[in-house]
Length: 98
Image (cartoon, rainbow, N blue to C red):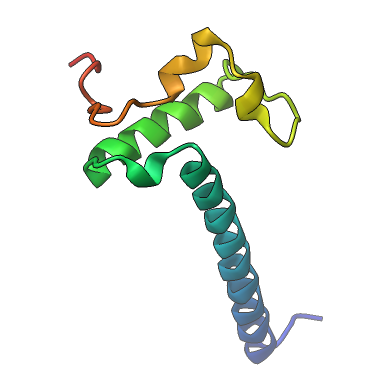
């Protein structure tokens, strides 16, 4: 038996609320980590910051990033991981190839 359209709409609405809540949790988590890393103190254009986040996400998707599973992974960061950290006043897009 097929579901009536009203039931499907209710289910869609419920799933949209779950999606919104999940996205909020994820955004808060990423925001807290970004603030701990000092990104809140850096003056950087949003487009440059987005590009840097996309590069970082690509690195982890490709398996290049090595998640440690530690709660405080920043404490175990090596010198080779310094590329993920921007010094104050550094433009994230300055070392990108065109």
